[in-house]
Length: 490
Image (cartoon, rainbow, N blue to C red; front, side, top):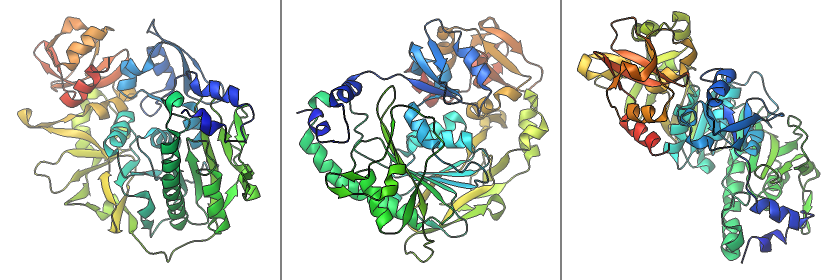
């Protein structure tokens, strides 16, 4: 058996031989530069130093590049969060939202592993983004921290049971639901067709229930994107059509994407099933130089405020939100400035962030967010797993606070003092990550101007983390768990 058997059933695909070739062919690798941390030009300049890497910009999407030669996934700049590898079709889904201004609250209801969440954070830096999933929470949080998305909180909840937010309307909801992933299989030639049919029968029920719940927790002002990475109409148009015919929503036009030959309109019928005519507004991305996707934009028809089930509220940091067994308390930015001024970071930069502690910790590490809004559960199964980045960790040996490597990299462009730059040598970087004591001769730049024991460390012009100065030696303070992960990659 092979996936070709399923492909033959799709009468909406005209040239099946060509389509089959596209599925079996190797696709380009795309990445976006992470402008949360620094400007595009600095990242591109850093990547251009690698002789074994060639890339060029995507002409129809800002900040995106296609790799022409080499392996971008093994470059330190990827691992330290200065870029994110993401297929262009996935990025285009996020760009399908029409609403670009006055967006305060966004829900990515099936968010892991976080590619679309972190792109949303870049496009909507002044919004609160709720990234929800029921599994793979660790990889979701890892990517949010790696990219430095400070306006994201992570919740764990079955999407079918996600709470109604009682006191605030959601502006945008992305429902990139679990699917049969027909665009991303690694075994097209030996695919189990019978297993596939059983899975589709199971997953379509799940997809419908998720989209149904999304419409229930929305208002007439909410813009919903329903998407999959599969071609099967039963997982795409059929699900959306069912919601439309139940009068829960109407389909809208997606007019925010470039005109590409592999982007087709949605179906209005399939094997005798007639769909609502507005499904033609949906879009299908066929796998030509990118992955396949389906996306439909929905606008809810009514506000469902009397629905049963779980509920939650949006609260501010001044309300001292409580999660599990601890309470968040805001602190004055001047406290953070005390420990960051050695790097030449101006007070106005520090004052832009929201600073807080977890009240019930014996020694409170200091956290940071770019928004003062949080989500708290009223009733139901939702758990808040992540609410902000740890920016200052208590350093017991010196009875002081040290900046975390993750936060220092976010401040990349603002660090003017107390930094060193490793020579452009991967072997030196490996030794540094292994916490070897590094002589000053291992660094091209040494700017140490104060008595603070901590310095920011740069590699290839970009901040990668924190280190401690011991006499004329410098030792990494990048967490061992993170360093081990990095060492296993490059």
